[in-house]
Length: 299
Image (tube, rainbow, N blue to C red; front, side, top):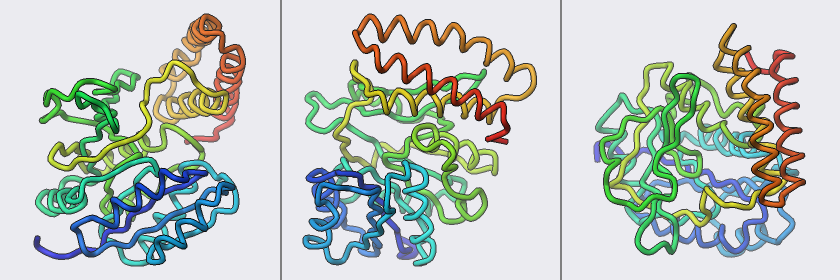
């Protein structure tokens, strides 16, 4: 390895006990020796902060004071890691388990290829047999986000895939990238902030990569049939805001019109599943996103 750059590991926690302890166990068992591990707590009430401080005294805990959302919460950790001089920052969910060599493999890849600004490891669903991918990443084109590899059997077909974005549950970001493009856009609150960050990096000329040689597991599947009101509201609101940020003129107007059909499909789908509250909050998220977009909330 050319140099032993400091890696800041930022883990956002919200009532993550006991999963966050397992995540930290694997991070601190990493074979990469130069780590600064930061846990940002988004207002947990389950005793996870006390448990982390007791079990892992070397881990830096920062209290957000409330549930600030994914983007704003992680930004606290990103800023702190940059202040400590981290050359690379790994953003990691609190329900993951990383391989002991994952960080070393990611760092080595970034050092070999200076064009890459953001890289993700291969993410498997924990305890899946045979091995299934959590997700690989995706492509943004023709006004559409296409996600690859969701819950698919790991057959190795994505080895050389070209991506526009990877996911924030596990992404290593070059410090220079954050210095140029800024942190997560916290106006998204939850969802799409990781896609937005990757697209901003690509606009600066950096590549976004997926590295199968680096591996980890993720506890939660991404395609469940049941969805909470909270997730439905924030997903739909962030989806609208995302497209209002990246579409202009006629494209934005056409997108807004298409949402009428999307609302009807959403209502039918959730009603069919008996999830009436989720349907209501999904529609509310769309409406709120529309108002925020038209009011110029995202430029």
